Image (tube, helix red, strand yellow):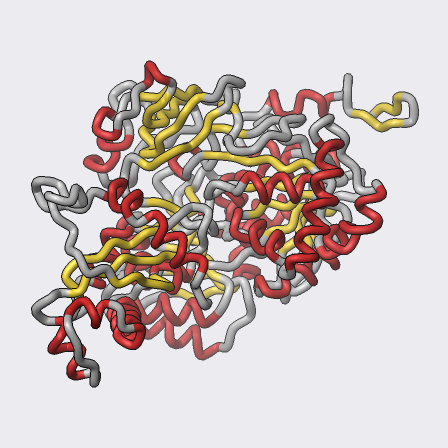
Length: 578
């Protein structure tokens, strides 16, 4: 490392070429550990782990090698066909498990609670997972219960990060599963520029590729990673203690930060100050010591540790208003990424010095992007609009044991069809404007299949039609409900309400009763909380071909429904009582 004019730099040293000389994450970790073993060397930090609170680079790589070697001694094969499940919350052992697999060419398959029990069983069976590494004994008991019921007969080994009671060994032995501690097994590319002084806080699920990709970039550059204590409500306390410099986050959390100004006067003052400081930001001046910072923004900055220099957001579109405010208020770079798991989380990224919002940046150097016609929605590539397609080494090879779905997503030339509709802007950046398919994301990044929810809710006795609506800038769902003119009056009478069809549709008590029944059906069918609608509007006219809301085959025309009920939908979101 050289010192030029009082500034330490890696230019003209071997580290300058680190990123270009390596081909895998395992190689990058090994290289980084060699360079930083004589530096402070801190890699992973967790105040609340039951094991070591601090892991140095050489400790992480050593534990990863030991764990990987231990897995091989237990019968795992060093092959891309060997799948290892990881069922744990964010913590240092998650990263160690991941690196152990990479070191010996095995594949990590993340599992997590919100997938639901059916999805966990499906993944274990589809991927032929024999070994699962999990954090808590309670999760191990869930896995053992599946084996005992013959729902995941292939699972033969569970490795626990936390200590556990001997009774768990006996429970595992009873159904033919070996339960071990991780310690026993151990014994037996160029977009953002982190450095060795950077600290990232890990709280987004490591089961999501977005979090794993950002972490990989950080530890490839010798940075450090600290883990939250597991409760998102205490994230601010964790950030004050850790004082991170890099903050990967989903738009929903950014919206919460923005909404903390909950009085008109406070909001006006902060927006006024942000607008004034925003003039500096637009000129490329990023700082935390202006007059506006001292008077208005110092408390906001302190609540996030006071050292942030980089926020990376993705998983769902972010509001331009919120991004503009936070760039000014926090005095740091705010990057927005776009991609999906099928292209290793990212295919576009905003660039340093770009302070505009409303787009997701330019294509990454590792991939190509093209737009293709979507004639049925009137999007044409010649107009700079169409479905976003990605091609490059970051694109996946296909879905495991699902050739039909693979063929639908990957064309014969290797282009990944994302299902998103994009538009090229004059400055060469990409703007996401629509979805080709009906599946979409909420602000917090959760995928929603509205038709699945509609098929559950349609079983509500007084309901004949409904339209579930979500918005990527909103964190919840709303719905338009059309009652059945024949069954609704009798159903209402059972609830103690009488009147004509139109009068009942205006009855707020009836609306509440229908809402409760929808929630009951959703819960009984296993819908997650984020899949349940939070407000409904009762509409007294059925969707039809004549009014343009149904296709000739009687399918809902979702864009037309969205436009037709635009004002009602806005009212529903404004009047949600969470």
